Length: 392
Image (cartoon, rainbow, N blue to C red):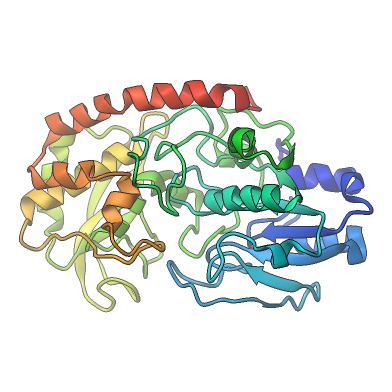
């Protein structure tokens, strides 16, 4: 039974009254659906008619067809609505004056997954900036944080490590909704912002407690289980380990041809990783890293969400792999997410600290010290975010 109404559904329930006689742009992706799995674009087209003027899409495309870091889509005419569709992950990540010229308000309806590296939140931030600069209003239709809103994890980025996987101070697992982030950031940006909050969502709710249907927001986020490991699993993108792209369990599965699965599991047993079972396995990706090669590795099975800590778990994986196979393990070289100089792992971590810890041959004690070191970061962020939390 559905317990939560999204911002989109609340807007539709009100017959889009707040958008009447306004020219509207709509930023959406495949998961921008109402409870009956109808997509926001045709729903708003029916409700607003010709007042809906243009569609925008973030990374992976309006329809979610492009893989990671594929920046080839440049816009097209949407066959369902007949509207022009503009890319915000290509030549322009921030809407230009020309892109916004024909609208009065930009409506944003994007499903996030609760991790700093997931780029939809940064597309939203750049849209707030652009709309503030060009005198356009913004309406954010809120959706659940799939991981709930009670737990945060990981460090804030160091100064100088801002990137499209971290344009502002935010923990790796941030515990905020899109609407809350928009309100917090807009305090300084100053756009004319309206957040349409959800009805019925509690911070204690994971996505499967909401009664809402899960739709892939991007090609390698197929299930809620994927989202649950992603705040740690995305760090693998900064390495030469396969993060499971090209399998049916991206981010839950990891490894490489030179990894001995059982030896890796034995080493990880030393790290005290609650809430999960690390199962040794072999797999053969069909695309991406090591396509067609047999890899050894592990699958992360989350058994207790309340105590599972994805950042801790995947940091332990990197420390274990770096210690066991130092000659084979390597950091991925740039470019990555528009960054051409800094190493991908450094912009994902928000500084060189993770890479330095692995290079030092760190083990369980060092991992515990790292967790202690980011407690002040989390306390500072929680204090800054408190005034903007919509749901208690």
